[in-house]
Image (cartoon, rainbow, N blue to C red; front, side):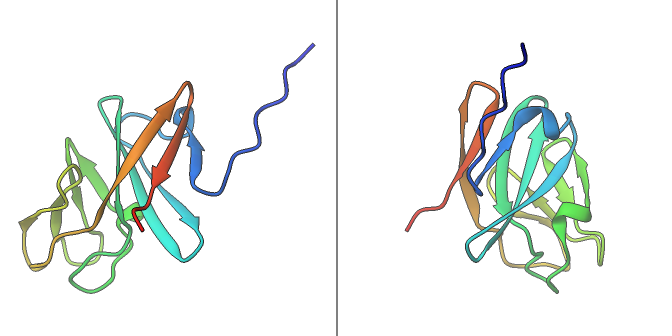
Amino acid sequence: MEIPEKKLNENEFYLRDIPTGGIRLIQFNSHRVAVYNVSGKFYATSEECTHAGGPLSEGVLKENEVVCPWHDSCFNVITGAVTCPPADEPLKTYQVIINGDIGRIEIAS
């Protein structure tokens, strides 16, 4: 008998859905958050590039750095810091809480 999967809240995701080196967009309330799997550790930032609003979930993750697909701005996904222009504003970062095989994004109020 199969055990049914837990119904996830909008700010939750299954860890298995984001492979190592992967990025996934999670949308909940008015938030668009990019979640990154960096060698089995999960990090979350705002999804829009601070330069021109490019979709970071469609970018490339190189170790702990995401490259925006529009103009190649780079950001550290752990700290949100800009690592190469043209962006000059950091990303917002969010805490990811892991509970078993589920990740939950925490947005501070």
